[in-house]
Length: 377
Length: 96
Ligand code: SF4
Image 1 (cartoon, rainbow over the protein chains, first blue to last red):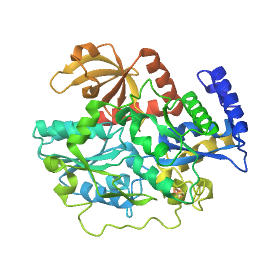
Image 2: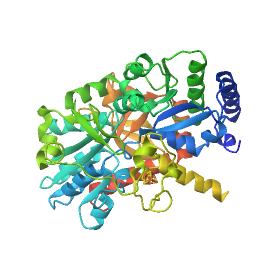
Image 3: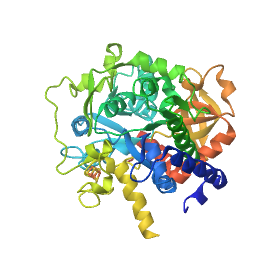
Image 4: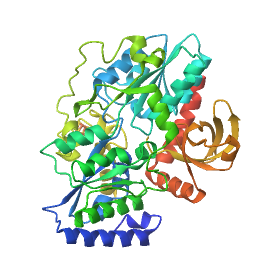
């Protein structure tokens, strides 16, 4: 138990691990016939690898890494659209640093910046607003991406821009929602999923009810979890307990942060600014119905897609994924990252070919980073 | 990117825009407090909040803040966030 000593409370961790072991035995899960637990959130994937939870837990548990890393599911076409806008000399293109290295079909934002585009990494959409205030003669575009955790920040920023009539500010909206891809994965006959660890910070915004369908329609347990290692272990134990008792419910392990009904201010801002798109493209998963958001008519002036005539509605926008890249199969848990022919060869964190190698929340990058650490030790 | 970081609200900077100064690991950063403003903004002074991309998303207690920060440090996320904040500052000045 090399990693347990790094836990804030190793004694508590050992107790939970022992209880997990007992439950796995009770269920009768083994390495040959494991229970498949999907952690949806990329932050959880990162924590699982960082703390070696996949090794600490018994071989009867197999973690399937879900699609919850917003950077990893960005399709190439959207990066191409970003580059197109960013290369307009009148544009200051602002983005979270995480998105800079995601490969487009021609270049990443990092390469576009090196080629002279005014692309600036910001911490917050509030920084983009401030850049717009200071540069009234330039168009300032913010690359809005992320799940429900991040969506309120751009919604509130657009509302603020509207109040100030900051007409040189717009958001390229790539916000997506967690539940639709989960439904797709549950409908996939090739997927074996016995239970879920749900993303705590998404639920901080939307509450726990959007996951009711997982328990009610598909009969699978889901436990909304914090991201500390002990939170994750406790949540795994709660999932196993439900399986052992034949229950399928939405449980909340992260009650100290997650209110059952979410955050009302955030939800109101999202509802005011955004509406659901008919469908949105996910890297590796394709177009998924009602899985993305777009800016409502009332805030059209702040919509980059409208302002620059790009994105959905701008005609044929299908783009091929890079040759030999197995991101889709990894994302749906069909293969492990190291089974991709490009893993560690044509695709490394320094030179990513697929998006799962870009962010520390991506399954491939997490595998790569921590297996290198292990090898070194 | 999705995890957020705990910060302590130390000053209300703009009542109308719901902005406050937060101290995050010794670094001061202006944040939006709309999502946690349930009453007069002054009530937030001294409180801890989970801050995500510049927005206070949830009020937490001091002990939870300390635990969360430790977990983030373990993941290398705390450092990354502080770097992102510094990036944001240089982006304003156009010096990246
Ligand atoms: S190793 Fe690279 S190309 Fe292969 S699945 Fe992972 S990110 Fe995609």
